[in-house]
Image 1 (tube, rainbow over the protein chains, first blue to last red):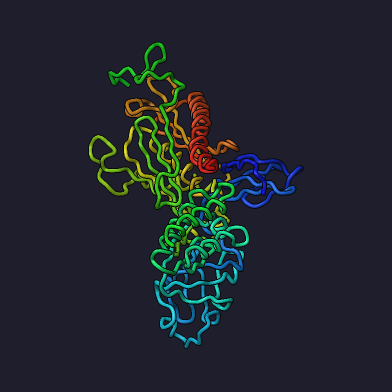
Image 2 (image 1 turned 90 degrees about the vertical axis):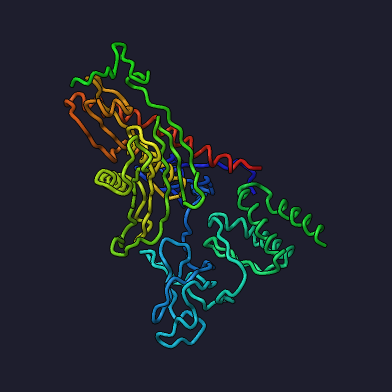
Length: 226
Length: 242
């Protein structure tokens, strides 16, 4: 892990030119010059210049696991809000049930939450999601909270290090949607602890060596309980 | 015009003691609202403006959606208590016009092609008014858009120039706006120098117009630096937590 300083860049900030670098994510090119297109953190890897966003809406990518909330039940599909710029379509064929035409409301209705996978994003950013994968299902019980989508990778940690820590010390079931929604289920005590920890992770998302610090924090609390 | 008020004295000093090329005091703070995706609070002389950005989200009503790009909905609103006599609340002819020109100015800098069928809502609330609220509003909206993490080509910035008792001056104050000869609000994209908004109220000769435009654009660059500093101040500190 590089321990260099992280630099914040502003939209329209000049980052380099196309002769020496290649324009990566979060940048745009004009007259051979590379500029940042959003507020974010500069990330130079090989010859690419990337800008990782600090804030902003969830940008759906095919294969992401997300948590959605049903907005509308139509005769052969549902419209699901996944925190993206437009609602996602969930067709009955992509649900694990055998649904009669017009009976969609029996299975999922307005306000229900589902874990889903992004199936398709076309060039006009129309979204489709599916429930036919791994163990995706309708959410019953537990608690859903919203976090900043750009901070989801920190909550998961490197290869899931942070999330497995959380699960180990709190005995909670946790599912993190890439769209910034987190589902937590467990004892009241456990949920409280998860919420506190996620809060810490969110406010200190950019600090180095965060996982170790969170572990000591969780360990200390665990000692008090047991 | 005989107003009986000396707006600018023989030394070139104005009513509030500024010189002809001096801006009022500007204070900008980014990210002040928690419910909005991005926000900004701005004080410009006696103006107090709050801007909040939501989105990109689904455009409602659906017939306003554009299948190729996002639409930018700016809504400029003056609070009832923002002026000396109570302003009747709700949109009127003036605020609808300002909403429209600000929407169009912002649409030019936001990379709208990335969000087909979506809407980006910008709410500009004028809490206290003292001449030049559309410039203050547009400047605040620019910071709020950047704060919301919305991809854009530039941070738009705005500033006005005008003419008082025969002199071209930068950034009119309240009395200067009320009793002056002309007001020229300008918004630019500071990276390219493109003009995003240009309106004029009153009369200017061609030479005066050119001079006023130069003044306003120079003012825009000064304000742009304040904008950038405000955003960096907010986020550099978050990054440096260790």
